Image (cartoon, rainbow over all chains, first blue to last red; front, side, top):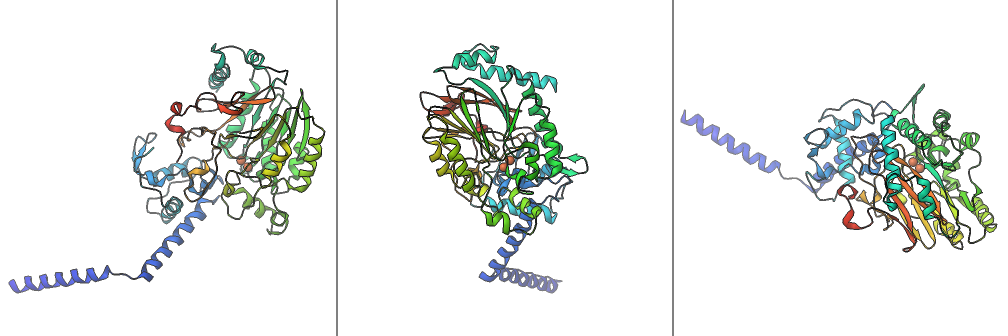
Length: 133
Length: 360
Ligand SMILES: [Fe+2]
Ligand SMILES: [Fe+2]
């Protein structure tokens, strides 16, 4: 019994040390990951300007050129019309349902992730201000 | 609906007469009280940027339809009657016959003579051909009660972009319709129209008040969204010799005003949707006129918020604007003779600003 426990302990230590080394990454890795982000943000821009996202041809960019006045840096925040603190994706769904007369997207829908990636990208450099109105 | 209109009328009368304290004075008394120096004294209404958008068949985007229908209904209730109405451009979203016809039908309910300005959304599908069938010349001038009015087509651009760049008319329209589209091209009036303007103004005496209607601002605010006219300086130079010049423009879907020399600039609101101020785009520099007290930030949960139309009072050669805002407090931007520029009559003092007028 004691022997098994010590083997298990050794295995845990080994696993731990493997994880530590997995946290090391190269400049090339970081560049590749940024490319991944840029690709998703570009898909987001395509969705943002697309008349196909909703059902009536209205695009996000019609009211929000360069994703302005979306203020991703202020979420989560209280939306008085929803009566609670929400994250940005819930507000995007409100827009999809109303001005775009379309359907909600799930929070983890790749399209929803892409829309937010684009909005965050256009707002890069602005200080976080959760809750701000 | 009828209650709403009555309330709006009451708001309108109250704010127009605010300088005279008594809330329910007829607008005509206000006009007489402000008439001096024998300049022209009359009123006109200004509706702009309806962006009527076709979905399919007989279906149009309801939201934008409602904005224009409401402006027309309210303008018809004005008392005293305005001398005429101007529609400031972007009647359609993608310039189709269906959209222009539907918009023109809504506008045709106006009880007044209507002058139309051409917007880029009306133009880049068929280069204004069908719009001309409805509204005539792309640029023109006329005289009214001692003032000279000029309507410009300020949404032209470089010939190469218009005639050689795109494989189809639909593609060209779509590329110009995206406000923030990097494939777009800066607005211009072009050499032919500049020559016409020069000739037209040569006939006008320098003390005649001049009013210019254009779709784009005849000043340079932010090129990235075409809040811009390429020949702004040249046009301003042509207007400079006149004592009193007023430029009214659409396209920006927000309140802006400015004074450059003798030229007072004022924008008008859209009946469809508001646009953010360019300063809210963190990645670019822009030049919002410093005189401007911004409109309220739009509440997205109210589809008519930060939209509206205008009622204009022309006296002593200057234009005062009443912004008739559907779901915000009305705003008045009047020409201040002492200061020599237009100013908001309620919010110019920074201590009077509201939190919603802060944009970031
Ligand atoms: Fe417009
Ligand atoms: Fe426009």
